[in-house]
Image (cartoon, rainbow, N blue to C red; front, top):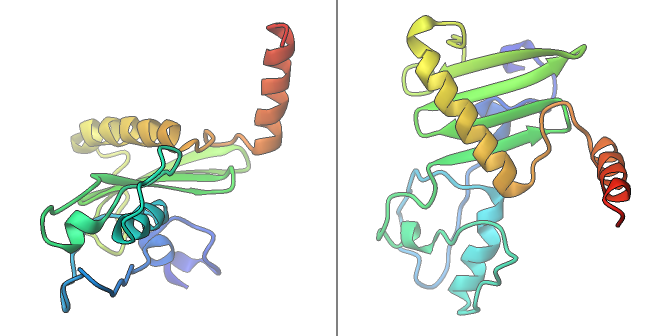
Length: 171
């Protein structure tokens, strides 16, 4: 496979970028917006199309304004995770991937505009230091917003830590 990997358990574009194709009343024919979206966005989009109020508990954003041409984007970045081993954030022009191999953290930063195949890692490039900081900040923001566990932390460890924390607090 691409990047010398077998399978889809990675966060490169060829594995996590999936086209979203929608058809129905109110959706213009033949349009192909390039807006960033997440699987989370399908539910609020379908609810809005059906005229159903979107509950506050629903994650994601209604893509209707993008599909109707009223807005270019509903989000400026997407967040991705594979188990406790990989985390990623993607903007229109850049992607940050951080992953663990044998408990060693590896960082990759890509300029998707000039390197859409993600072959040139810019994480150590001095000229990209500011972008690296911005992307890490965005990853942290979206990780918290969507309840994605930190890199290296799995659910059983998180539950155990919460149990200990709650017992100390007398809950």
